[in-house]
Structure formats: structure tokens, C-alpha cells
Length: 474
Image (tube, rainbow, N blue to C red):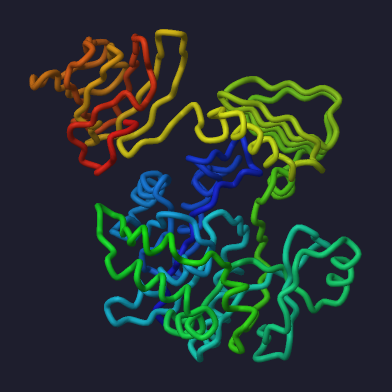
């Protein structure tokens, strides 16, 4: 049976700050102990279940990160659907279903979130295969996670009548319960955690959306009618999609349809919604500690420490979360990590940048790391991917000096090209039209020193850009 994976890769992951930032949220992070990002792990989990390139739903701000991570896996071919604004899961899945059916096909959609952890891939795939006959006969299948604890942070699904072995009708969707209610749910054996993963035919979902929320379907049809392809992205009409009501698939369809079915899944699932979840799924030492990076611990128990680039030493900690990044440190009681989002809200309110950007910022051509800055200078380490090129640009307020650390740079300065090798440099005066390209086979690394009265990223006049970006930020 033809399965088309649909991976929802939106969201900001504020409860995992400072690892997760607005412009580099958790679905694109590589979790401690892993070698791939959460998005890449989600794609890898599909091997042997579906050979199709997944349809990835992302937002405009994250498009180049998503594209690069798919490219690294050989899974990039015009398959990123861009949402101009967030409108929750019901419209996002409607866009995916309409896109899947544009050439007359009607695949079974396996709808997944990009930021879930599933430790048992074999059990995950077996459960999906168990649900396929239900989807083939017109059911809207949701996967309920067999609960392992009385969790108050998840919604629940109550099982109804048995449809087949390991499959049930949906009796009810239940909001997040208090502890006593969650304990009762666990004891009954009739409730599963609501995972937000689904399996159904594209046409059946659209049929039920039309029956219960025709306004959402109409808005999505209008948005997709004038969609345009741009590199590896599909862009829908922004105005039409902005007019779409915002609603989740649960509220819009699953709680109203008579076709809902639930298939329980026991596959080591976690939505990694907070650092407490990350501690729970991490390997721990004899003291219950989960450490990543350069960590020295004395008399420390049941603590999670993630050290990105510095030594972190702890003394006498209990049930604590410590996260060190290049530009921020979080220290929190493990039972208070849900409040991390309040810190993010405060950073936003004060106009600070730490909620939005890491010190290392990703661009379609590579990334840069802001090493140092003062009142009239800024130093960056720039990495340009093989074959990539920065835009042809100029600055009104700053001059730049580039020093090649490794690789080969092709520099264009006022229409003249030159090649720079390791330990060679070039000076770019204020107002000079310039561009930087990596013509080689290995990453190009260089140090950029900016000097001037204004050093903001918006002091760029972009004259030409192969990535189709607007005239702001590299």
C-alpha cells in the first residue's frame, strides 16, 4: 500500500530553551547522545515502511534548515510545504492532503510530528502496519500511546468497541487530567496518551473536514490553488492561508467524525516537551544523572546537565536541570521546567535576542558564529558549504576583512574575482559590491572582522541571491 509520510515540522519548542530558539527550534536539534536531528531521526524511522520522500510542513523562517537536513539524507526533492503563518494542525494536514492528491493519487497519509522520540522503531513500524487495513477501509486512525505512568501533561484517548485485534473505535478524547484522574485512567487500562500521530487516506480526511469544518477546507483550497514552486519549496497563497481559521485536527475532525479509530502503540514514545522528559529518556549513571559534554559533578543526584562548549561543575545538586549554550545558561528545578516558557516570554518582552537566535546562526549557504563584538566591531566565524554562495551585496555602514582559515574562497570585489587559500585575506571597503563563494569540495571556514558605525544584519543591500531571499540578513 502506498504510504506518504507527512511530517509536521513547525513549532517553536519554547520549553527547551536555551537549546531551542525561535529560529532554530527543537525539531532541528540533535539531542544529547544522538547523531541526527529530531527531524532526521523521524525520517530515518520510516526506512522499510515507506520509500517516498516525506512531505514536510515547515514555516518560512525554518525553510533552509529543513531543506539542508533533508538534503543530507537524500530526501529533498521539492517536498517542503511552507506555511506563511501557523494555523494549527487541521489546516496544515489539509494542505498536505490536497497536495498529495493533485496528480490524481490518493495515498494513505502517515502524519507524524518532527519532534517526537520513539526508541523502538520496529514496534513503531509494526503498529503502523497493523493500522493499514483500517485506513484502507476508510477509518481515520490515531495512534494512542500505551501509558506507562499517570501523566498529567498529555491528553488521553478512551478506547471504545474493538474493531480488530489491537484496534478500537474512539469513545472519547479527554483533556489533560489531574493526578487522581490520571491514576484512574492508568488503572482502567482503557485510556491511551494522545500522540498526535495519524494514518488515513487523503480523500477521507478531506471528506470529513468538508463535513465538519468546510471553512477550513475552502481556505486551504484557495491557498493551494495559486501555489508556486520555489527551489525545493511549495509556497501557498499567503493571504488566503492567513484567512484560514486556526484549529487542531482533534477539535476540527477527530472528535466529530464517526470514522475515528485508535490503535495503541508501545514503542518508547516521548514528545520531549520539557527538560524533565529529556532527563527521563536519557541514559543515566548510578546517581541518576544524565550528563552531556564536559561535566564535573560532586554530590549530585537525579540531575540533567548539557554543556555545549564549556566545563560545567556541579556541587550538591538534586533534581536539577543545567543547560549551557554559547550565549546562555539555564538552571532550573526539575519539577519547574514547564516554567521555562515564562523566561522566553520575558526575553521577548524585553526585546532581547536570546529567545530568537543562537550565537551560531544557520543560513542556506552554511552558518556563522558571532565570536566577539564591541561598540564598533564584530568578529564572526563563517562556514560556507561546498558549492554555496553568499548573496552579491554591499554595506553602507561597515567595512569587512575576511581571513581564510581552511578551504578555498572565491571572492568577487567590485566585479573582479580572485581565489583565496588558507591564511590569505581580503579587505572589503564600505560601499564595495562583493560576494563570497566556496568553489571547493570541503567546507570553507573564514574569520570576518566587521568595523563601522552600525553593524546590524539589516545593513545589507542584496543585489543578487540564488536563494530568492528578501533584502535582509545574509
